[in-house]
Amino acid sequence: MADDEGEEEEAPAVELGEGAAVEGAPLARVASRFTWGIQRSEIVRREGETEIRTPKGPRRLADVLAHTDVPYFESRREFVNTVREQIGDGPVPTTGAAEATAADESADEEDAEADADEE
Image 1: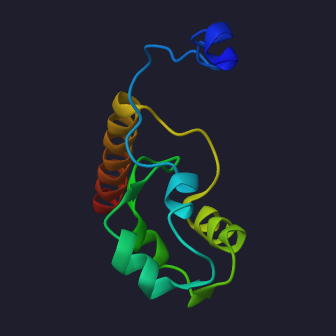
Image 2: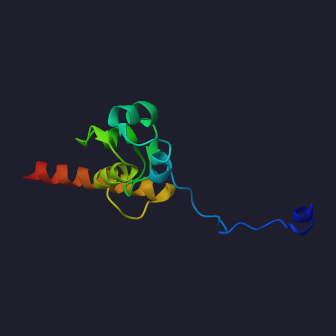
Image 3: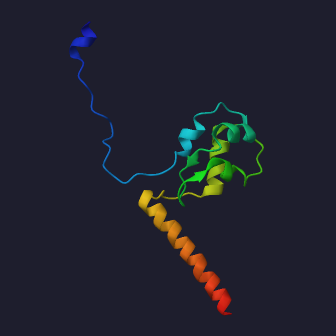
């Protein structure tokens, strides 16, 4: 009972702000759901539909893993490093910024097609 008397409600260690939302799950959270080693096909079966955060906006984990040639991940580190090679490393855009980036990329593609048609 001595423990109950002096206890006070603790404030969170990090105060969360009112920022814009970020779409997709953090890669670390997805990686923590598995027991290592694990086959790539098992990861795809269990979490393939999960969207992960990337510098270019959220992407399905199955789509990212489809571009790898690693059939078996012996460790969490190997999995994270392999996925990061595919998605790149950098700041993750917020919800509005990801939409703007996608719009900019499609506009760039349209400009490139228009330039090719003019030649």
